[in-house]
Length: 330
Image (cartoon, rainbow, N blue to C red; front, side, top):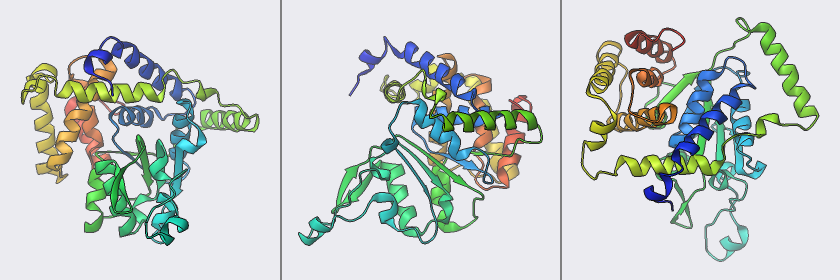
């Protein structure tokens, strides 16, 4: 595994390639800059992203193109639509019958969720409790159980989609695991001609077996190295609070606290302790990715995506952008 000393000489080049990669991916979508920005950020932070919206709003297309842009094989990508009838074997892999005869409970995971690098799970909240508990273990600990033993998974990026976020107690833990959620809305009213033109070109590329978006500037290794660098830098000083003193100016940190408190007290949008720590790290990651330095006022715009329920998402987005003076497109 890379050390901080090994990564420091190349981190600026890695960061530049990821930023260029993000810019290049946007060329193949219409009015999806926010979704792409969050997808790339979550890939850097290895945090899951929840896309909330109706079918036909480019959710799976975004994840597929991101996967292909990294030069990954089809076996590195796993996509599945979940229902309450989905069995664990459908996402984790079937039980190895031969080993079962020997008294071992082992799944054949090749091509399944534990073996992939990028995953897209559609209608995640329609899955049953067995699936949800398994996914929580994978998301929280990056492992699942084979024959009673914890086994690391290869998953690097997980994206999920839903039409709604049910207000049910048993789903709260899973919903909270997605610290960032974004509404994906239809764009045809504002971009009628551009949407048709882009769609026609996309189908022409597919028919010709071409994937121009696959020539991405960054590789999966770049994203892994970036994540490793951030993890090491968070604890580089070995002093509690030192990272915040170095990278999070007091005025900006106070603004973050003010916004979180306003959301909780005025709009009843709860931010759990775990989620707050994750938000700090993701905001720090965005700041370093975008401008290579300390957190700035505009980086707090990420707080616009912390809503928990579907009805909270537009309220939170509007309020945070207004409090920061970022405007509707901030």
